[in-house]
Length: 166
Image (cartoon, rainbow, N blue to C red; front, side, top):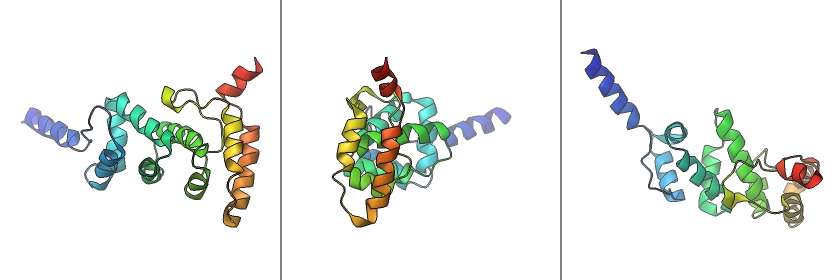
């Protein structure tokens, strides 16, 4: 009896994690977020079972495409510290491509990305790219946030800064 209950519980829990294709698209992830039995918690749980989904989602966020930015927005409020740090790094990459959108929608992205992001997220000379991107943001409502972000970017110390100093 206990074994049957355990098997039923495992089956129920596995139904709460998404079944992504080999390389999930933003649409697949957004679809999983819309399912109340999966949602953000189910997607984060899937990261424990399959690192490639997490890597693909981070790589998508790095592209700064509108669909992936929506994924990041909907997964931003997380209690998973590791995922929060990874997504913050991916948003730091996205900042170099869509600074206005990133400034409008997110906090904690004005730092040098960690080096454990997917290779497709690499931005040569990130600091210079981020500062140049921030200069393109001219909306008065974002001035204070842009200026603070530029200060944080200039002060940021990460893997790239350490490599440049050596």
